[in-house]
Image (cartoon, rainbow, N blue to C red; front, side):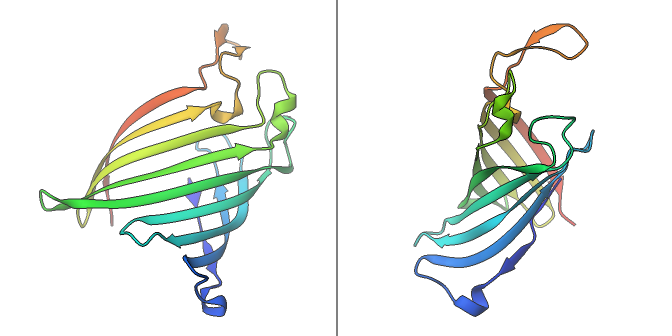
Length: 180
């Protein structure tokens, strides 16, 4: 789950050149299966590209709560740069076709001091989406490098035998959703 409330300073500062919006941002991530909450807090801005392209850049500091005794537990633990973009493409079959994507670059984590872990990771998602008033269909491709800050190829055993971690690669997803 990802929640991204924004507190915008636009009414006080106005636009600053190509920066359409400047905001403070607090984001919380939580996993569904186990509770290992992470809090990202920082600044974001919408950038006027001069084209019909939406561009948002975020810079976060990361606070890690419980993390099963890991080196980064209950501490400020690195930072994230996130770039989001949306490109409207055309009308198709009565819906709106668009391309969207985001790239997260995480750096400076204390996990890098542990064996098989890294202090950085990258995830980049690219989504082709067909949107209707209530329905949405999408195909997504995702590239990840050191996903979850695990070193690619690290030999692990979490109680079910030895295996090598595959944390760099790509994944593909199909999505169908309903908007209320």
